Length: 156
Image (cartoon, rainbow, N blue to C red; front, side, top):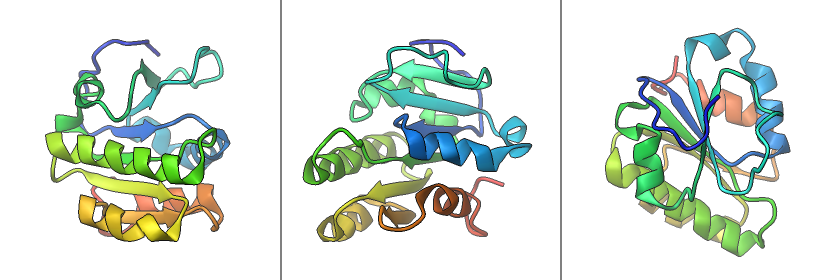
């Protein structure tokens, strides 16, 4: 795990945000964790000792395209954008949409799964190009895993 370094791998999964849902999601990966390298982007995480050693960490703004360049999004298989739990729902959704726009701006064909908190922003996430949308009211961690490995996804 490295902080603020450029990730050089290919076919990796980029995860935006570190929270309990992402921790639970990693439980579902078990052996598939070795098949797909993961890059975590978060601007709030200060200590990385709680992360698995196989996760490359980039501290940065997930709405800034430069952060996605550090994550080598041009060669990534997918991006999972989680809602920021410490923000109001409206602000969290807007930031998720901005993160999606930043990622798709660099790699328009990247497979994207976006967690959204308010139903009114579902249409905006679709317009921004999300491949899968998750509403928080559902059992999130398992649903995130299922969406990432959906039969049409690029992550296998």
